[in-house]
Length: 530
Image (cartoon, rainbow, N blue to C red; front, side, top):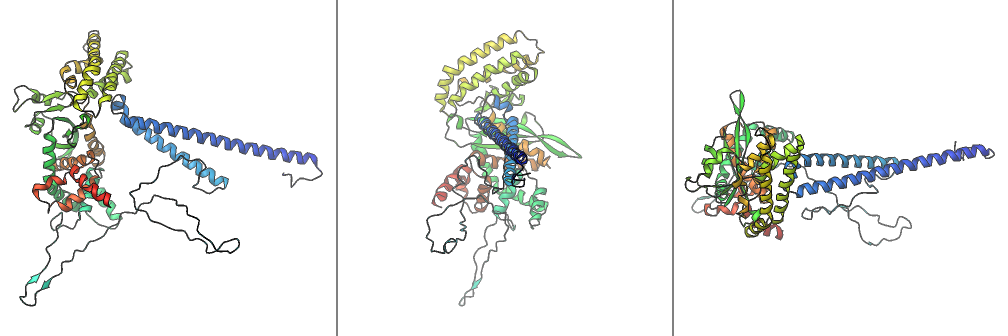
């Protein structure tokens, strides 16, 4: 009962109605306060998660090297769910309150939309006269609201017309030459080929799924047709891959690693290998652009790295794989490769014991190793001479202290102890682990190679296996092109499309102009002019 509905002469009824209304208002205010408190708590949690994610992305060494990938994925998933839940609750609260949906009272400030995107101006119709008095209106200004939108993928057929002309006097027929096609007598344009290659090897989307996606858009392209295009495009791009391979193997220091690749065999799959060698001089401020090369093999025998690095005699940053052993021999021709071990591998072995077994000695080892990583961060991307000076004055005492502690702790442990095995991993290879103290070009970890192979590890879950040895070799070649483009902050799809459109008519003596780092420099003035 409300005061309006109560009998004006019934004082008690009026008091009861007033009390009921007051209670309802207080309950509504309590619900609003609770909703606001939950919203504030959600915003605080979102801000906290964003900060944690930013820190994990910023950190390159230490604990993030072991837990970073898994923890980062979990935090981003949690953040996404939390933001979606907060947005859903806000929209429902606005609808219940009768406010205009899509205009929440409290939203974090957002930055402007990318300036390089084209703008489409949509002007809403304004009244021709004042709605109050009918008088003439004069424009005071305008408010612009920007909304990010996407144009769905569109297909088109390009008809290239070559008109024929005949001479009335000599009857000679004249016609422009046929244009170049990335695939001889093929019907695929360079942008389509680049999209297929980048989707298969960059986004790990198998050809059968691509074929199904294109069919839903009204374009029937069979898997065999797509596969034919992939093989032909790989052959067209092979000269560029050869230049990247030569650039990588000319490095003073290489990162090397390998990962498993299922290979289709008779009625089953066997475990093949994909090898990665990465040239990355950025940690010691080297001028050479980064690049990566991949190789495929059916097994993991030592003959493969020996063949890959047959003419190489620089520094190899890698794990303790025994197959690299022959490369380090003094008697090797043309010269021995200098071994540089990976501290991340060593730390990972100890960290697992500290996290799983809760071993105090393992935790102490992790703490001491982290001190080395922390000191090393100060000279990341500094010239080799500066890195060497800092290491000899700051890092070397920490390493010596760690080594002494490891020897002392190892003497107290049984040879069957897991921590003893982890310490032996480093102690038996101590010259390789301390190589970075005498050479400013050496990195503390082999993370560059592991990052290059991460795409392969993700792709295994999508494409399941390589169909043949030739397929593995072809995948290795395209992986090298796409990974090298990404290392140089180049969009692989845009680069591949431009290269496929130009490579046949491009002079062989100037083919290096199409390499990702040179291509990017050539594109920058054109982009600025546009």
